[in-house]
Length: 320
Image (cartoon, rainbow, N blue to C red; front, side, top):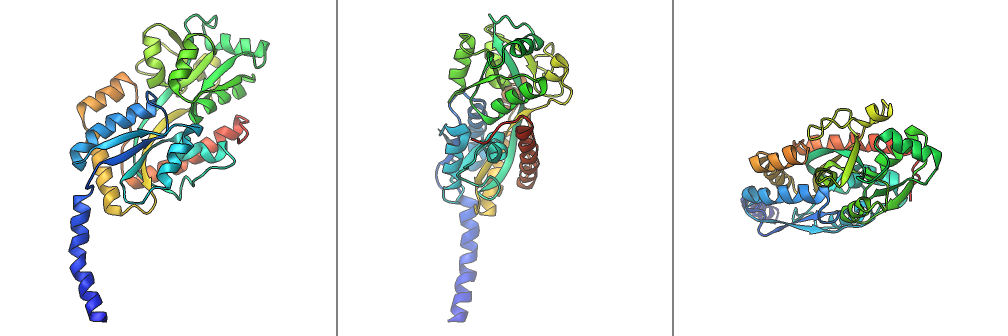
């Protein structure tokens, strides 16, 4: 019986290799934990379209928005660990969740197997074009004169943390107005129903370029190549320690076989070489591609979890 078992294992070994090489046998489901039109959705669809060239199967995007990305992320964490369901995650889902919520329905580190980082992007501080606030200092002065009279929109952890960090460092109090989707937040900003929206550059740029929104500052330490005349928050408000940027990561459920992770990683890295994708993300949306190995992605997410946790606590945001 023992000899028969060994023989069966030897005979089965080549089949494992064949199955791994032939994976995937059908479409891969790519979960985006935010609404259509969000920066995460844009990144996911650009990568998904070109990952097909390597995988030989489509990556079908499914938007599962809600709870700052927790709903979509949980769906992937609970999915079978076969690589057929993957998460287009962000700093919200894979770094900030534990510090923002008392009950997170998954473990950011234990429940996901990082495949690759995808891109990073600065956030822009925007107000309606009709706003009386011409500079960031104008807005801060208004908030200082009337605590919680200046409102800000948010649809994700990065947007809320960026806003509360600004308020905390400037010594003012803003009124938070949460939204489910960036599209609704942008519309209310343009209609002046909210005073400020700090969101990914990819979300704000179209409204800025059309002249309907005014960008007061960028949240990174250096200015944006797309908006070279717009100061950083550090410059505009004399807050030298202010810095924040959003990022995107591809992950699968923990336990996904290593050959499948490797194949998905190869698909991401090949997609990142596409000239059209690079132009769209880099030149048009101002994002930086940061693809790499699964190990690099895991290390990056771990270090960012520490940074975001510290930023959330420093901003005085209490877990919900």
